[in-house]
Length: 328
Image (cartoon, rainbow, N blue to C red; front, side, top):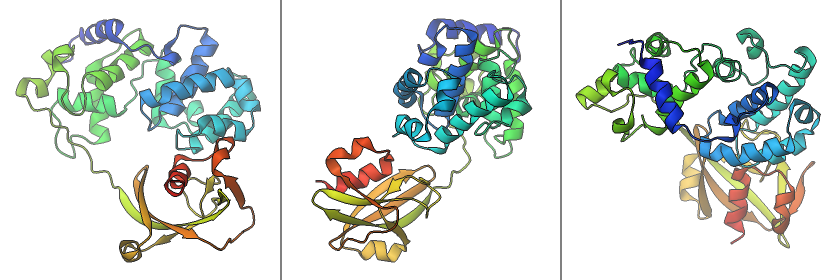
């Protein structure tokens, strides 16, 4: 199954079908490294189509490492607003500063040095080595995992373990075009080998695929634990202005502006007569009671925001959703 023509098949498909993405533009080595760094941070747990407009705006406002390192955290977070997982933006700024200070402005070519950068783990370091530095690495994202599961028809928990999938990765072999090759494999997973209804007629690997031969495309995934939590958001309003506080209480949306809120039990949520909304955040389903208050309760660090002027502030989508729920 490890035919020498596997890389050729994949690269031929990629050359004819790859998406035109802003971080793939042909540019100088310095820009390519910077584009890869920014895009890989943005693509952590976020879809390509969501990232594209954010990336274009971000690069326009922070065209290189120096501009990013010198920018205020506030300005960077404003450009990240709505993309979620704000720790990525903070870590990206720290990483830019560290690269300038410790690596003379050059993106490291050593995996351990890359992992020393804030926000760079095993997957991101391998992506950078492959894409920016043309090193023989194949990052293991969900797309690559899915291809391997179908190629080898992996179903049991042992078969789909990280350890076994990394062993099976040898199926792909290697190519001198390591940068293109890593992106090509992930591209096939994203565009062809989809979680459901894969486009097998357009896939270059059907001859090697056990799932295709047996017409068994069901993907076995490890169960993701999405916990449900219940909250009460206290909305203090006065003349179209609403009270917000800087979040010091919860692990999510740390230091960002939220409505004063507290965690409650399921029973209180169930029997509440107040308006309710649902918010999905990473691995948590949040069920929130919107409790409008008439008496204003100011706390240290709180501020009133006019609902017509919220674009001047950095507000997570979570806060905006509550804003919208009380503004109609």
